[in-house]
Image (cartoon, rainbow, N blue to C red; front, side):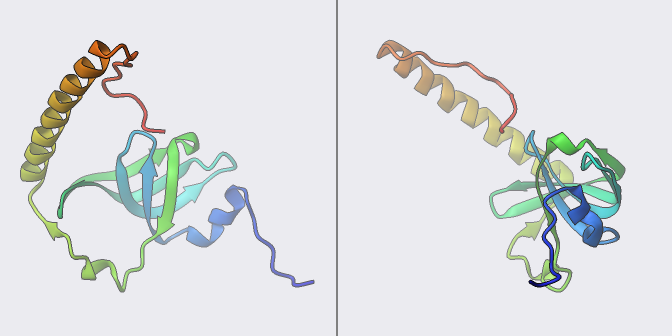
Length: 136
């Protein structure tokens, strides 16, 4: 047999230390930072972290600095290819602008959901009114 072994525990993060990672959290936030440390529970410490907000073909970055993430909140974690990072077709916009666009998009979604829920309720369907819960 090969000496190659696949780790399915937090030990597999050893190769990611000191590399730039994208981490998607259960609440939908996307964080980009350099992995400095982790433990047996996959709790992470990211340095030079930014929170990236995507809306349409644009994104905005909010600097967060050192960020400690509880392992159970991680949905996805991946290394960023530094060679391809600058080739993104997305355009960067100021944080204030992306937050405004995000807020407008969220308000429009809430209005659509209210109309849809009202219609479904009138048709006899049970509708869960979850405002801002966990995505996963």
